[in-house]
Length: 562
Image (tube, rainbow, N blue to C red; front, side, top):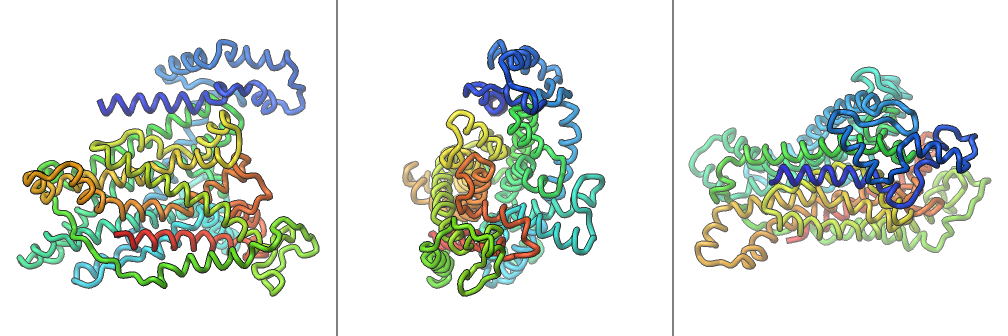
């Protein structure tokens, strides 16, 4: 039944994503005609010819039926724009994306290991197991395209150690893999830090130490116990990187599957969109299934026999100043710059460095950067915080209520937010609400998978088996045991992604699917500043610092949740 459910979800999402432009009443024949020949006048005769050629006269459902019938025989159709077979375009793109994702996953694992290694060793020695959540939040807050652009400028342009763009051999994948894997590794480090801390402070670990077990034996057991949580998130992260690497692929000119899907969606090339989404969803389903299998292998029969031990509750020790500092800095910047005009263009003051008149400098059009960062906080950060809160609620509802693996979460997580935004904009039109719906529609999946894994382990713990035997009700177990153990790690997981959500909202606005330029959103500021980063680094440094402060503040605030 689970396999059948995953298959139905896969077919349904593929059909909806591919055919929403048709169902919304937009004429794909016009887009195809303009893509093929921009000079040709889109008269009625030309449009009718394109419709007959593409088989659009029978309507969207007949088109979907023909596509499904051919897909079962391995024929994914022909591109509406180029006229080439879709399978030919997919072959090379899939190979590139698989290689890039594998290397990025390796980078993510290395980054995660580097961030949690010291707390792990300290915990084995009986010392404090406080992790580096703040530093992990800084790395997670850095946009992939910003990391990629800096790496490109330093290691490819300045030093000439690696290629600048394209794809010929593995040397072309080094910088894109680092840019894609570093933020993902930071997110995994937050999850791994919580899991290791719980395992190191669990009662069984103290019992093993008192019984004289060797440190090496205890270390392996701790890694195995924490790995049951991390493996599920690793599968989700890998699936997300495979489908959402379009920004990195654009920076480095990598001909991968994510970039192909976004380009096809913008051109309304429905057969290519359907094929790309089908492959992305298959990878997402496979990654989620492998994560669930790895969790069961790591836990063994203890998961179903009620033999797991839950970690004891721990007190929050971080100080109030540590908690308030990011909020104070962001609030101060907003109050400082909210009275300035973010739209006034002064070409005589282009790219001025920070000064008394312009404390953050000016951008390429001479606009005051302090004003644009401050005004952008009111829109970008507020929307991102709202979407994050919605994501947490959805993740807890789906993750805690579901006792088995959620195929829908695995599939949704693999979808690029840009493709979903295009689908939403096709029916509701572009705007900030369409961007919010698109980002929230895919952002809930990783925290939901995390919540499901934690709830599953809590339900398999020995103390809950004893509580049931003593007559505890389901409501008592849920609100007194399961939720208190699940909510804090899920909050940290969701909040460390808040800067990525803010950037995704702004990036969709930059693409014309959300708020339109010249609105002072932080993602737009980064995109506008990247061409001048070498000459005027402040145009990127200050918006990036704002994202970092939001990420650190979110993680620190979540870390104080009991």
